[in-house]
Image (tube, rainbow, N blue to C red; front, side, top):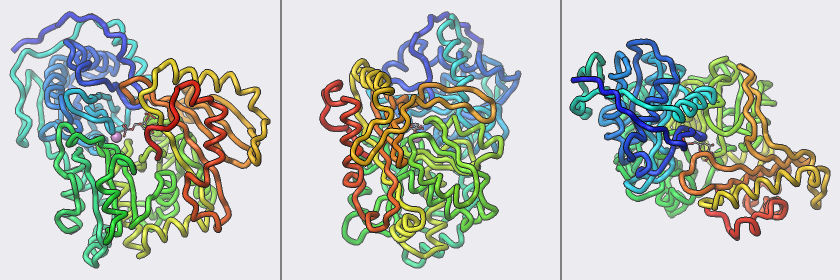
Length: 543
Ligand code: VG1
Ligand code: CO
């Protein structure tokens, strides 16, 4: 067994996006591609000799091969131990939990999250720090810089490590501990929520359906919802993780989680439905014939937090990504706690949580979580809702409508234009930037533009500045239109348009969001000239 130093040449495209490096599988399979990025991580993070790491992924195609490569490289780079989820499986929130619980130096998570998998699908990799959260921009920038000058990497010349049984082996001087990916996480959930109350709710005939979308959360949901909480077998659907997610798009929204949506809007629908994504960090919440928008879900979780045992002492504060609706801000105001607005991506919440400034965080993209970990957490959100439902004994719809009555409703929608030619998408953004001064003060019927800018964030904890985080058109009545380019796609560009309008009038709360936002949508299309500049009449997905 010897350490090889392999000569390589830099790739120019290894810049991490919103959540790590994501590329098509054939890109990752190029000779040296994964190895270069992994060595760039190791060269950037200054781990002490014999440090330990957590390693696992969402089980998609290429997960196992990548894990073997990373293990051999970790051994050759002087790590003392790597904790690997059995079968190479580890959801993103569970990885965060294990890094924190076992106090490792950090972890490597293999996932392209909600993107499809398979030989022609997507693959991804990211580094999480010792707080359990995604590396900050300073670290990801350093990794990118290394990747541009790398000329060699180190790897052990050795046979593959068995990963399918709980065991401890050695690789060179490094320990490899294969652990149960579910147990630490399930234990953490039991410490936060009133499992007895949820068990009683389910025993009383309250029906639930959880769609794991053939992704990583299947084993977690089966253990927690069915085994520990007593939901009848079959409450978890699509519960076996598959390398290609059964050919599906593991993104929990009304478009891609269609199996579940059909059930929840059908006859004899269950009382509660939920789904999570490829790596288990996103969540979609549904009631009987009712959809809860993620922005509302964050606000409702915040407003009901003290009903839940792990949060009964109250919240330090809330943070939401900039495009997320301001529904949570209204709750924060009522609770007299701060509400922070950060750029898109969970890495911006870490400092706020580490500094004890916030307890809850959320994004409009079906992401909600708290400071129990440093990632968004799909099953956590599901359990939070179930705990609230067990205490309040009302339907999901009644809870949401009651919330709107009290706080008003923030109508919200996001339009995604996927797979655009990059130049066309950049053209829309450029056109908008050039229109800032002409737009400011302009009136569109009842809407007056108050501010147009490119969102710039100064981290309140370390003072770091992140520029160009999305174009904001802010209206005098609090309505907003946001334009942003996605940082997680692997093909062309995805343009996201986010629309929000606040409605205090209860008699209008029954309206469909698309109906309520009709005028704003018209304004957004008009000022961006999106249709002319991209040739697209319709968005690919509306959420
Ligand atoms: C998207 C979402 C963002 C989320 C990110 C990672 O990013 O908009 O809110 O944090 O995905 O989620 P973008 O740059 O494509 O808009 V996950 O569950 O894909 O790790
Ligand atoms: Co995800």
